[in-house]
Image (tube, rainbow, N blue to C red; front, side, top):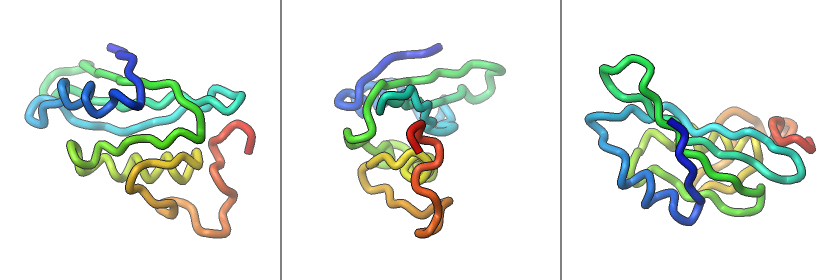
Length: 113
């Protein structure tokens, strides 16, 4: 199931959905859409159920800060730091340097890189 959200309502939308004993947070992913746009995806799978996946997505640009889910799902920090490195996004509380060194090519998955 794919559910649209927005960055301003992300925490409310996922907070209303997420139950730690029912859903496993898999990752946050990005898809460069070109022209400075990105689709962000937060992906969950249901415990004990084969192939039940819920994907929340939001369309954004590279300048708009992305809220962090770490207050709700502490392990989300890993995926958030990954999209900071790979796309050059600004995610609340997530720093660059998980995968890339300071001298690495910046944001290698961003389309205009």
